[in-house]
Length: 111
Image 1 (cartoon, rainbow, N blue to C red):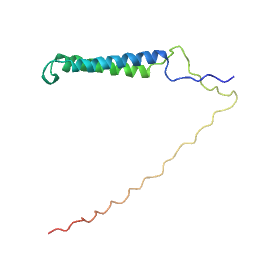
Image 2: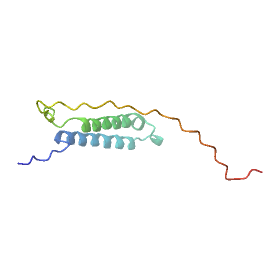
Image 3: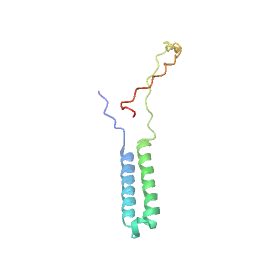
Image 4: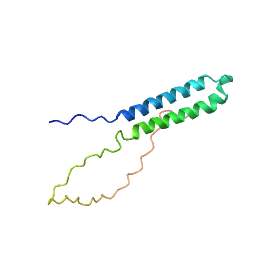
């Protein structure tokens, strides 16, 4: 029996993404509705950007939150009686500084 494919995002993630997109859309529309010159009123300078910030935070959490918090990610079991291989320490070679490059001749003639 083959296991069914697992998706990265579950229904909870998609609901949060739609909510974040809705808050972002409301933020942009709020900035458009400002009646002051050049959008310099309360809606364009304060409320709209706050809604955009909240919308982006919701989108961030929609991506980062687990779709099923009770789910445990399986880890490959270690074989009993088999010692894990020990990696040899890595020794770096000494770094020799490269000689300074000579300045290139200018492509133009000085008068």
